[in-house]
Amino acid sequence: MNISVIGCGRWGSFLAWYADRLQHQVVLYGRESSQKMKTLYECRSNGLVTLEGSVVLTSDLGAAVKHAEILVLSIGAQSLRALMQQLSVLDLNDKAIVLCMKGIEALTGKRLTQIVEEYTPKTTTVSIWVGPGHVQDFTAGIPNCMVIDSRSQEAKEMLVKAFSSELIRFYYGSDLIGNEVGAAAKNVIGIAAGMLDGKNKTALKGALMARGTREVARLIKAMGGNEITAYGLSHLGDYQATVFSQYSHNRRFGEAFVRGEPYEELAEGVATTTALLRLCDLYGVEMPICNAVDAVVNRGEDPDQVLLDLFMRSLKKEF
Ligand SMILES: NC(=O)C1=CN([C@@H]2O[C@H](COP(=O)(O)OP(=O)(O)OC[C@H]3O[C@@H](n4cnc5c(N)ncnc54)[C@H](OP(=O)(O)O)[C@@H]3O)[C@@H](O)[C@H]2O)C=CC1
Ligand SMILES: O=C(CO)COP(=O)(O)O
Image: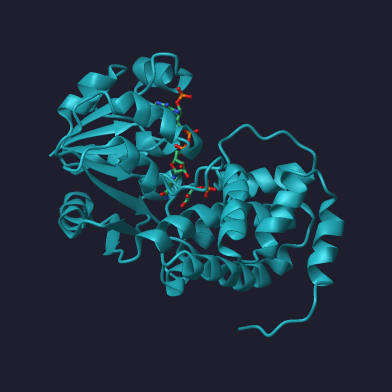
């Protein structure tokens, strides 16, 4: 199929590499100003993937959209609205848009599919492709399981068929709200995990997983999703990749932050923390771990004191 990937960073470049391996006709778009794209133009490699000559590189957004039956979007979540404004003047009729991104808009609390739908005609389908997976593991041949969800059953089936291989086994999602919120929220839990590592409190990660899934499940349920989705591939299933992996940008951000060290890579969980707290207010849900991450990262509070405060909260039933 004709596939265009918008976003030439770590994940977008991998998706182009992966789709090309599956014999699709692939175009990878990156902005003209992009240093990452410049490296790909020059070397066809970014140190993570090497792109075959069959992958067409372009900085012409119109050409990328025109080529696509499937339009894969993989950029930072907080930039999605700006990209959709650019895309909305192009012909998106009958395109299958798939969001390979994890986040919630910090300013509005909107899910990413909601943003896309504001800018697309009725004939465009919008889906998400989320779940665990690091480029370094996939390119080493280690397979993983991921999930595709959409309000369109037809789009889900088409995408699963187009992207399934021995490297990625897909499951059909059946809870778009839960999978979007779960995928975004795992990055916040990832930051918390990094903070524990940075404070030499790695032993607490089991409790973090148990309580993190509970608070995310509560929010998903309050938003009209299925709370069990928090225990599926998009959230709990992504914990190894983020709560434990050396490759996780969110975990590494949290670790660096509490050690007072700089960290340059995209950590989606920072903005997602703000977005989730907005949703907590809107839906009347308590998310103590998310609140703790916000206190440390966005309000400059002392991580040791914040952790102590978490422990001194009133006693509760586990479930
Ligand atoms: N398993 C999974 O499902 C994974 C999902 N992800 C998700 O993928 C998304 C991207 O992450 P990642 O690739 O690591 O991030 P990177 O920082 O590596 O890349 C982001 C890219 O987005 C581009 N970008 C930002 N705004 C725009 C715009 N308006 N138009 C075009 N391009 C734009 C940037 O371009 P420029 O170079 O010009 O700045 C950059 O190249 C995130 O939401 C992340 O959570 C990431 C890894 C794994
Ligand atoms: O979503 C991802 C892995 O599934 C990428 O985010 P991290 O780099 O924080 O793990």
